[in-house]
Image (cartoon, rainbow, N blue to C red):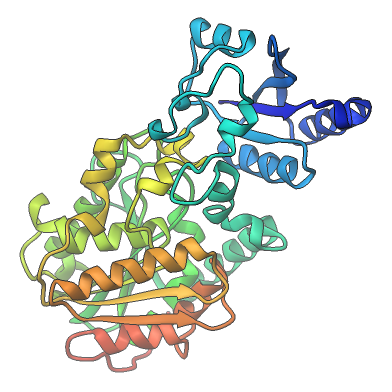
Length: 411
């Protein structure tokens, strides 16, 4: 995937531009990026470099570093052809879609600066870099790789300690498998947990640890996998998740669960799946009233800002998909109970998404619990679900229709 690196080489810092370029190219090499080509635009002092990146996460990381140095801007590219590249290198008008921005931005003046164009907002008041920062929570934690390793170790321990039946097929493809954390006695309420990862990363085996608190509180926990973007479309991913819910309902008695007490929980992209299943699940054939409650943690309810962010290089949302798959656009009256959680230390956009959805959900006559988790970021918020005494685990237990008695969930 490619992105555009833009710097305006004005006379005021022309003497320092060579040193700045060396710093930028050193960072490009450090992050494993590669330079495809570089240009000075004719008639202006804009310096444009086309850079190849292995993934969207690295684009975002470089973008924030580049802007922090005051060097200019980084803008994503959805793809380009020779005509568009000729426009860039000759200083002619360039369509805003080249930069992953809103078509409403339009094209820049041939006499103006390309940097002025890319500094314009791409969603509400956010520039591209600002929007990417809002939706890149990994940059807000000290050491995400270490956190991921810790989750994996906790998850292995959970699978060993709890009654886990792993890799049960719920559909025809390799990714359509789920893990079941069963109770000793039959008739337990069921919680289906959908993992996060922005629809393009993550695996159920990394999230087994979230089952511990709920299992200790008497629930059977099911954690499905689903195919990831861009290998599948968002529509296909969502359909698989509906299929997992349907399979759990139809086969609950085989693993000791109660099909009349199915509850959903999900984190980040998984929170989006929970919200969509509660609003549009019946259109996909899920029985009316089957989902008794849902807990959406740091969920995403309006997908438009995601479409305009660095994530869309992998998720590849279209405007039509945004309308079809944004839960906030499909709200209806329901008796299902909803809890909306967000870490107190998360970005403004995650709080806005949660508050907007809560307002619209209640406007339809539904009830929602708002659960800001003190001292939690986008990732540590899950500890409150994994711990049986945590705020989110307790909220999940409380919303189960007839309560959950504590039972022995060990092997």
